[in-house]
Amino acid sequence: MHLKEQVQPSVEDGKQFPAVERRRNSSVSDEQREAGVVAVFQELGKALTSSLQLDQVLRTIMEKIDEFLRPDNWSLLLLDEAKQELYFELAVGSASQALKDVRVKMGQGIAGRVAQSGETVVVPDTSKDTRFFGKVDEKTKMETRSIVAVPVKFRDTCLGVIELINCIGPEGFDPRDLKLLEALSDFAAIALENARHVKRIHELTITDDCTSLYNARHMGFILETEIYRSQRYNYKFSLVFIDLDHFKQVNDTHGHLVGSKLLAEIGNALKGHCRLIDFAFRYGGDEFVILLPQTSKDNALNVARRLHKLVRETVWLNDAGLQVKLTPSVGVASYPVDSRTKEGLLHLADEAMYLVKNTSRDCVAAANIGILPDTAPAATKSKS
Image (cartoon, rainbow, N blue to C red; front, side, top):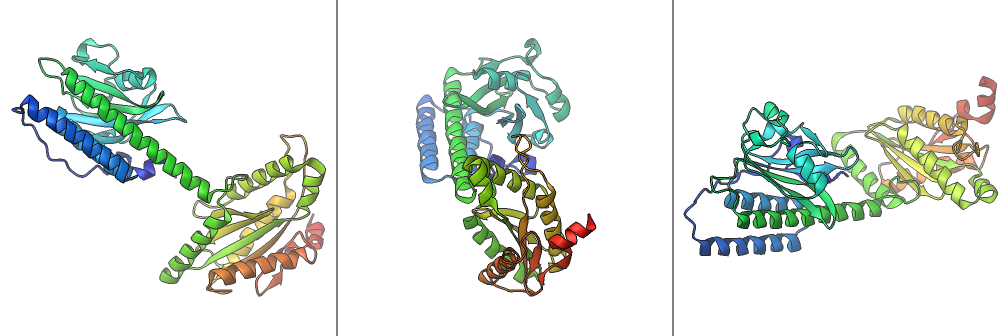
């Protein structure tokens, strides 16, 4: 799950935060303003401590930026660490929709410089600043006259940039407003970091450490969900159980570290041969399970044949110079033809797999059918 999935109102999804009432009352006394700032921090503190919902905290921050600083447009850019680019996670104002596909490289333009340096930049007149990146204006058809950009940092790590457009008046940008904006960016950083931790903790609870596939606990949840979905929409789906034959010999010969690397390599290969809608799990030990949504038994048997061939014909751990070869025992069961319950499907797929293991190994069997003759070792040899 990507961080952006937790930020529901992403402009990349064509959505924005709910509309904010524009407040442009300039006749506010210093006492009223200071009281308002205190209320802002109280509200944000409450949002951070009472909810792990990132969108709720960011919405509050957005409202307060609009209420106190009154920019023509403002945006939150987040850092794509893999590509070292900033993308517009939130954009508020007339040009927001035009920004959804725009990316800014680290060091490019004002936002890119701020992300790179981790320092706030105030540009009263963009026409006099060589750092200004005019191509964003070309894309949005708007005129950027001034920019205030602050980094969103957690400790020493820059997570993104908050950028305000056209909010500097003739008197310049009030230092008190800059301090408020930097404080709001700190709240945004805390919210983003909290979301990252929640995401990571969730991943740890559903992911197998060795293979990075989903684990058996998550398989139970997904299987229940798929049964409910298939009952409701009259779909078919199938389970493929895969057990590696004589895997213990790999551990005994090369050690458990090599065995773990082999499991990871095979798991990655199995996942790579699945569709985007399929699920790959490490069931435990040297067993894997593939869940094939909207897949009939006949089609599942073809998938099982391909995966059987993949495992038995691949030379594994070439990069480690070991060239390991091994065979799989494969079992298949399908909903609803074999069973309509989670327990029934798991039992039948497991039973079909053990039918293979207790006979010839190295082939495919299906619930209520038995071993598929065209996958048996003798059949394989006669075709080669």
